[in-house]
Image (cartoon, rainbow, N blue to C red; front, side):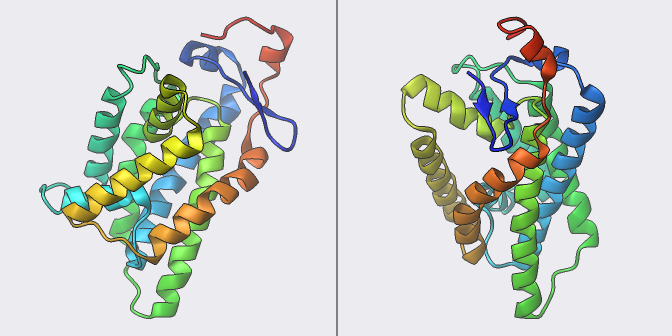
Length: 227
């Protein structure tokens, strides 16, 4: 079943092949890539603010304290491990899923290489708020491209489908779990963690309708190309 946004555009419930056949790739591919690049940059901004990481980054930072890898490499590694969890859920990845797994980490590393850590608390708070806001924009862009969910979002929706539990409950349990494990490994929980947890839902709801690409080809041929 397709999910409508507030502007009337739909997020189509279609498989990875149908995502590519749905057309408008000249718009959707650049939107996907830009969204993933900005997503990685937003992660780096929150990290440089040093006021607490976003939930999954608590885990990424915690793991990075035990492995001789960059933050971005850890993001890619965790993404690929999460994709392994898709196998028992029988959830096929889309192009956007694979791009998400492979590109966000390098984008974060590239931003960390050029973005200094501010000293003044005011600048750190500003960087945190800007990073969380940019993350909401980036989420709307990459989901709105309709080329498949990211590894973590797909795990969340797949578990909700298989268990019959609500997406909200599954997401809450997942994020509490990764924050707890990440904190035990050495990740930092703080203002940024709490701000992100409360802000990302409303921000995604705000920006997703702005960036969702309409797929008229699916409306012209309902019931077809859903796999």
